[in-house]
Length: 121
Image (cartoon, rainbow, N blue to C red; front, side):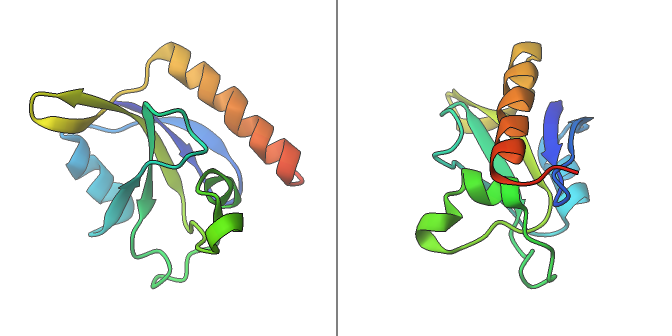
């Protein structure tokens, strides 16, 4: 499955997560990750974050924090984030691969956030 990773250094890369997706996410984040639906993203996209990132003392992810509207509630996003598509089926919500158009749109949008709000080196 195709996803976008945004690192704490504001590096964006397209990655592939091997199915089953939850096992692949476990390999990236460890035991605890959370799927959040930040208002900063269109409704079909979700952000997956390291649920225990604060305990691990991971650095703040500035792009993820902008998407999560940390400036409103004060809770930052830490560690790398993954962005995927969310689909709804008869079992409820599930994660799905990004499509080529999604990747182009999201890369442009996320680069805009990184360059607009922060100095990109």
